[in-house]
Length: 252
Image (cartoon, rainbow, N blue to C red; front, side):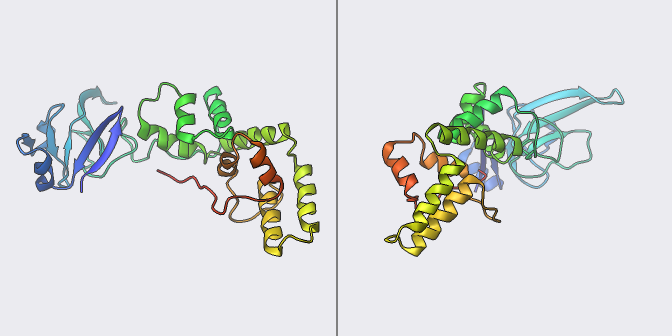
């Protein structure tokens, strides 16, 4: 089955075999020696994949030698380099590197764009939409999906999101003190089932950061469940009535 990646709104393919390629492109010329292929040509990689040359260019290396290179959905490759033209769909196709450009950083400077992203997410906006709004020059949905997911794993960004959520909760009177008092009220109620009490206690304490566990509740997902803070949702929040299934953010 062909692998795909959308770049600047255009879907590009990496076919696993010539047979698969011919089903979609029965009459398209195929260059068997990829070093002879030109921009726009379809060629065969060293491991037998069929890909299109998205860009062909030349650069001068440290020894002042001219080097031709190609860019495809499986990466950038140097004609003079020793690395074989092999692989699968890459996240990073704009430089010669084995490392992905989408690696998670633990900290880093909180730029204005990242602050905006954190604020949008805290207010309940979908992370991908939040990324596109915070970084308006983004044209690739694929890029926005990857970057938004990884930004939410960045420690500095997550702290900013948590701070925004804390501010939102404080604005409607939901402070850590309030959560503790509400937890006590739930415990003290006679007509509440023990399981419901325990679930309310655990959930509220996780949200407030008072309970340290190996698997923490995703405050971003929870805040999205309660985005808008309608009266009904606030009442449910106060009573410890939360959705049965919590939303989780995963890599795309």
